[in-house]
Amino acid sequence: MIFGLEWQLIAELLLLGCATGFLAGLLGIGGGMLLVPFLTMILAHRGVPADLAVKMAIATSMSTILFTSLSSVRAHHQRGAVRWDLVRGLAPGIVIGGLLAGAGVFALLKGAWLAIFFALFVGFSATQMVRNKKPSASRQMPGLSGQFAAGGVIGFLSGLVGAGGGFVSVPFMTWCNVKIHNAVATSAALGFPIALANTVGYVVGGRSLPQALAGAVGYLYLPALIVVASISVVLAPLGARTAHAMNIAQLKRVFATLLYALAAYMLYKGLRG
Image (cartoon, rainbow, N blue to C red; front, side, top):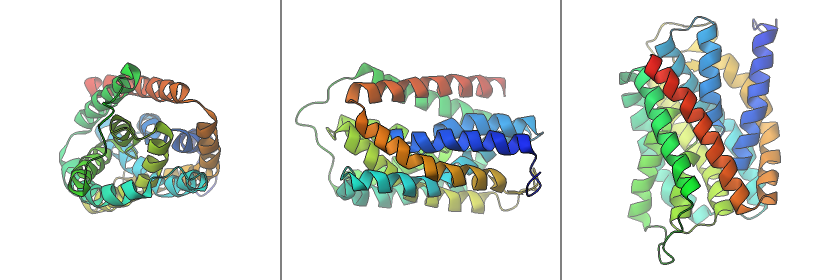
């Protein structure tokens, strides 16, 4: 055991951290949509009630994005792929939406409903990618007020499902004729304000909860945060380099396949709950 953690748990979290870090760089999603289902399984297996396990997985997943986003965005920025003008336009709304979700709505909803919401919205995002419907050539990103509103929606939805926002922001930006590689890179940059706002919200919302496991603080499971974040920041740059080596069609197929698989699992968990 290390720091009170059994070897099997450490191995599971390390493997999960490798996968989420790589996907954070590859798809700009912060890895959260992979981390939430698997961390839900890990917590439930260790006796955490199903309703609370989903919430802890979502909150812990979001907090890891504080670290993976910095590593991922650095690799994308070095390639000049991040649209910093869009980051500045979307971030203020993201912070407000994230605080509303993390500190308010998240604590009120049951874990089963959050799991179902996660599944339906992720499935919708995957369908939009698979359809590959070409946006109108004249469609562009909205002005500052429109970006503020879009950022609010992205931050709020991200807070409810514990993902970095790429499942909303990447389809939204590509719909507005932002190139897919720029959309992925910009989504990675947006991961930090999304994670910061929502993590603060989770801490505030879960401050009165009893400790579910050793190392848990409210909705946050600190051992998972430490282990997953430590390894994922190493793998995120590799994912970013891989993204720039793939063509657009390949990247969209990878994105959609991942989303469908995770949506199916979380729908099953939500319906059972």
